[in-house]
Length: 303
Image (cartoon, rainbow, N blue to C red; front, side, top):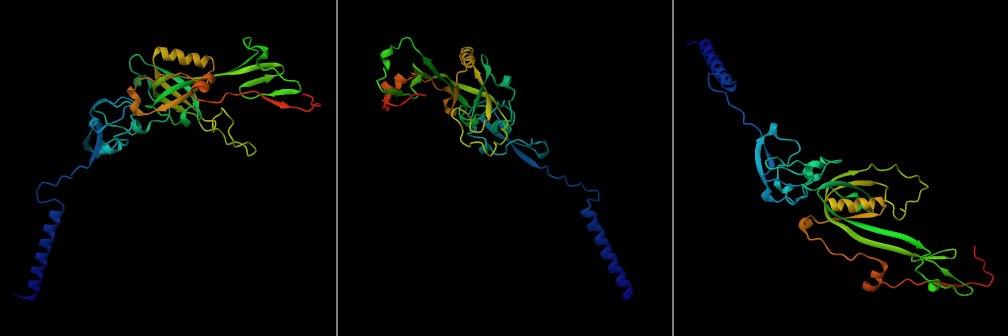
């Protein structure tokens, strides 16, 4: 066989092998084409209704596999990231657990859907001092404390001999003994835990105020918020609790919210005595405040 014939034969063989390989790689030859495996995502699903404020346990959850294209962008893939957390909103059985149910949402959610039969939603305005640093979130449980403080001047029940000034002396007045001219009064203060263990169904945090001017004092004044930021806390209460809280609002009674542990959801209400000055003196051993007399020079002239 001539050399040229052998070259042509080898070239034909190489071309045939190349064509065969090309057909295989392109899925030709009449054979079935390979089907790509769809991408799968894991999704945490509630197997029971999870009410707002509930501490989520492992038995309340399952993990399903769904197509990646159908998986929501705000779901969880691992139940460990959900177990032990407080539900900030209700999750119904069969629904996936969204991130907002754990982290909370900005602003108030659909409050009506979070109320149980017989409950009413009521809003309370607090600041950083009276609202646990504005850290309260939906699903938390809180108590409400009332604090009364009123100066009663010229009380007719107090005799004039209650605080008789001595010759050449004048009284030094403090928090408990109030003096204004010749009038003498007493400071009346009372603190009482009024409403206990109510559920927070929504919150709305105010925007931060504008930065203070450089000459302003950085020290917060007593009774004011640290930054001036306030929070609207919406609580679920019964009819009687709503009347008590609204009465306090009408009287402008200062209210303080106390955050409770999630495990206190079914706790029995505590019986408290309330606190007045007499209670502190008799039961807590606080020393009674006494008037102080200061000797003044003979030429002293009161202003």
